[in-house]
Image 1 (cartoon, helix red, strand yellow):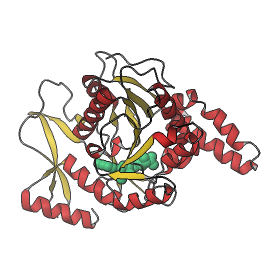
Image 2 (tube, helix red, strand yellow):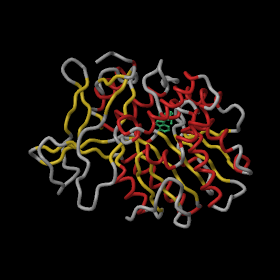
Image 3 (cartoon, protein in one colour):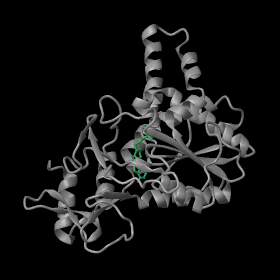
Image 4 (cartoon, protein in one colour):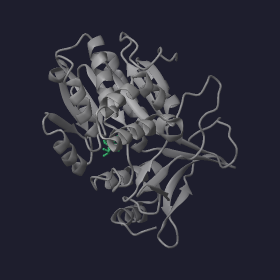
Amino acid sequence: MTDTPTAALLADRIRRSGPISMADYMSAVSDAYYARGDIFGAAGDFITAPEISQTFGELIGLWCAVVWQNMGAPAAFRLVECGPGRGTLMRDFLRATARVPGFNAAAEIHFVERSRALREVQRESLKDHTVTWHDDIDAVNDGPMILVANEFLDALPILQLEKTTDGWRERYVGLDDKGGFKIVLKEGEPLRGLSAPLGTIFEISLAIQNFIAKISRRIATSGGAALLIDYGHGIAPLGGDIPFGETLQAVRNHKPCGIFDTPGEADLTAHVNFDSLARTAWTDGVKVFGPVAQGTWLGQLGIKLRGLQLAKGKPPEVAKTIESGIRRLTEPDAMGALFKVIALAHPALATPDGFQQDTPA
Ligand code: SAH
């Protein structure tokens, strides 16, 4: 373990009041990490879809504009983005939707972003638009809403359960003899009746469930839709396997590292469980579309054609970069299959672009 300021703070907290849950560890470490500011791109720690190709934000923008038309083109609606990173997706989005009469004028832009440093980067990217920032979705005023989030859910805290000879135990973070972090098991059985081999890890994100419940209720009451894109497990077929296994990972300088190596200086994420996400959404009264593979969804929306348009008349190196960016987003062995797209929509809304029909509960 490197002695980062976050490690020192957390070790102190554990010394004073005992081990903390994995979710508390992840939440504290992520807040410290995103507070650093611009961690994206070649010089940063990882790269995301909107930073790879402008077509990503453009197509999402046009998708949202069609949803808005299907909502009856309300004169005002909340356009919400959660975890906007550098603001690139929304900048590309609004440039594309500027051609849709009435859309940009009707959109009240709200960003849900906790990092003050990233808010400054976003302010610069969106300097031609009026944006309101919030720490939490609760603070966004009520009314029809279209919400987008790319790689936001994977950053929300998860808890981990481990199957032991005494049943399921929750994994906590404690200190070893040298003052480094180690996994400890909390007394008590939080889960019963779920059989799995000894040593199996089962991850649950209460933060994702809470978030999905809130946005679903809002959409069911006031109208609209949410488009969520992330990497993770799909929906298990009826009676199929529950996604077991440890997926929590840390990435620094584009390379994986241990979750306790440099707390606050590496990005911590976990696979999103789309199965449990969809179940929460159904309970709260919305229709669920997908999840479908990102490559398939972008293909349906015409990403190849958009790429050709962009490349037309450009020098060959530029055309090649455009094409390779699109391949990276869509090919199954790159981001096309692991990343998935799911939409939650008011039950009265027509099937949104890129999906065949709603997923039955
Ligand atoms: N959507 C962007 C960035 C993804 S990184 C892109 O695709 O490039 C995750 C983003 O979510 C960052 O902006 C981070 O600051 C934000 N974030 C993480 N946890 C959050 C939380 N609990 N509440 C609000 N924002 C959060």
